[in-house]
Length: 157
Image (spheres, rainbow, N blue to C red):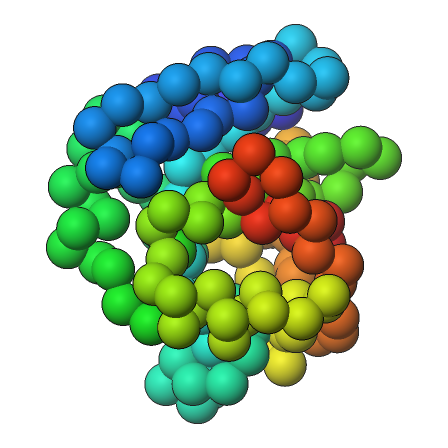
């Protein structure tokens, strides 16, 4: 895997969870491989062609995990969330969206159904590319099952 910027890269082999106030970051052990790369990201939902309206992922930016609580306070709106992006089972791109980083409106709109709706393709930006591919992976238009646990909404793309 290609190296990522260290202040965005989370420790391998563990999922990250955060308390609602974002002042404490706690590790939760997982069954992911020890070489797994995870990045903390800020996500804006919607379609980029529709100025971040509708459904899907409009924008994704790396978030320095030492400043995540401050980032969240500045960014919290009805279409934004903080998540952990990683390569899950079978090398599928996975994003664990932190519930505490979302407004109730955001949770209902984007995670209130069994599937996460993506209305147009989204290419993962190069700064967030955690694969060994030159081009960033693509999240294709479609519906993706939402799993909910440990304060996260998890979507495998």
